Image 1: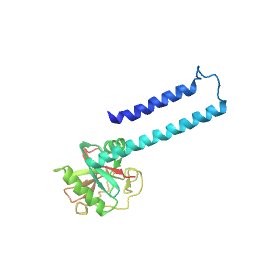
Image 2: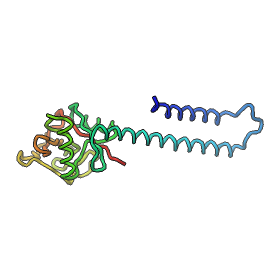
Image 3: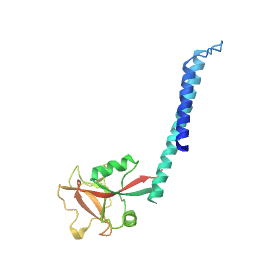
Image 4: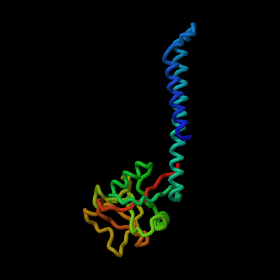
Length: 198
């Protein structure tokens, strides 16, 4: 209830200010010059815009803190495992809808932290989607923002990556100690979202 009070209050204030600025008062006889009234209205509008931006920023920080409390915090990011299996693209869209992206390990330490977190948070789960794929060009792996990936942890014992066009999305295998393998993107898997801490 308290979370809704501030945005509702701001909307009411904005509405009242807009209403009072757009209609002249019937009780006042002296009318301010047009330039002064317009400048005051612009000043009030800019103050309201700044307040609205601050409220949105606070809401984003609160949402990020909630994610961090439910998941883990490491490497200036928060990670959260999602246990409802989805296709690769659905998983990434779900992460984006929550303000993040599919997790993309950038080095061995980050990969190991993700593996350990996934093992703890979803016991018995074997693998998870991560934000690496070669959908656009076979063999050219990029993250979910289409940036080249420089760190890989392929499961070479299973001859990964296989190099087939059918398997274009990457999963992290908890069972194989965090090694990666490419997989058909339409496969259903649990996944790990990452959120950048500003």
